[in-house]
Length: 190
Image 1 (cartoon, rainbow, N blue to C red):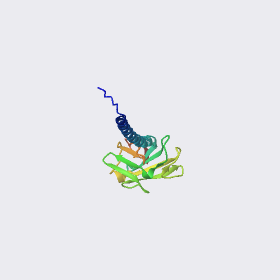
Image 2 (cartoon, one colour):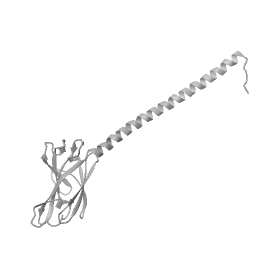
Image 3 (spheres, helix red, strand yellow):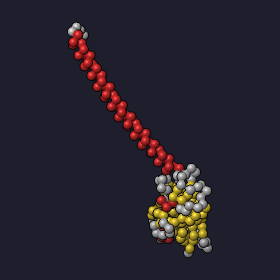
Image 4 (cartoon, one colour):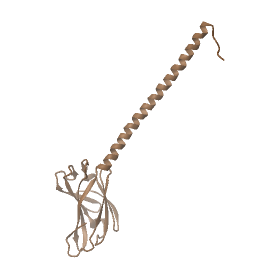
């Protein structure tokens, strides 16, 4: 089973062969460890970036403080939302925000512009100094949407779903419900 080598010259060659195999195994193990360390580093940085992005989507939201509509000829012709940062949110730039309008007869995505028209909304500063950016939780901006430019008529009893998506990808949904009667009113709470 075991062969005994008595010749001194042949014994050295067996030792060198074993040493070469050992060095090869160490090199293969070192290369494999390097690949594993590289992969772990890549996955860690990717996971950290994903975590930061997910955290921003959750925390960088807008809260709707109040909503009202201007009434003309028993139709709501303008929708106004007063908004602020949610707790823990970073600066939110409303010029990079979109609003999805769904209802009662049309769906449309609105973007920021200096004026509220068919595909746009605009903002007015209520409290703070950085229109159209919410910098502090005490800042308030009024988001103005021309309802007549978006839909044919927003009448008594109609309902509109407004989904506000910030530049971070976080979404806030607000349901604007028009009261059942608009007779003799100039403005109504939505």
